[in-house]
Image (cartoon, rainbow, N blue to C red; front, side):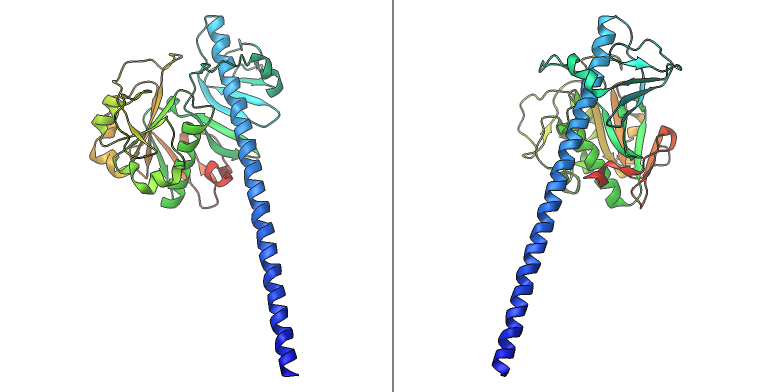
Length: 313
């Protein structure tokens, strides 16, 4: 009698264990599928943004007119919108300007005819990156139009997660075709680099400010990589302008301590460069604070973000 009861209990526990494994396995599979679907949707959205920005650059080039100063890019899925720093009513086709001239918009499907399929197609807004979502719309900003230091503040882990998400998108996404990210000094330690995933030809390291500024650029001289994922920069500085269409855009990433110790505030950055500081610095030109609920306080950038980009993945 006791033996049969024991066997029944053991059998029941085994069945419960099998059921738990099946449920957990199903949950993991569902989560993996959802994550893959999200990644594909993100990629498609970024490809649309890249196509739209190329259409702007090509349209302005054909009409020999200056490029617009793009303050923000908003992608709702049904519409792609550029918010301009100043009014400009002459949007190149297929873009259309609103009555104020401060917003250009386009239906993504109308961009298909603008894609020439050329591998060399580029645009000058390569440091445009996703900050996050606001009411379901993707909110993006061109870091190169934020002169001076951009300080990411908040909980250390949240700051690191957001910085890694920004870097990953720039060096592996379709928008950053002319973008180069330079991790400098302590920002190139495993705490940062281990979270960046696979290697990218657009991601480099430099030991010091001097090395980063003198070697920062879009090509490597062939020196051995610092690690399997990163290469040291070896291209001399030049004095490119912010409107130059085929000029590499550089994002330098430093910690707050290195910013102070190496006097990055005095760095002679190009007009196409951007400087991202991990941590608080009192004299930052721009502050972006990561809130505990996943939203961002973008300060002077002036863009509301409900869920920052690291939370989306």
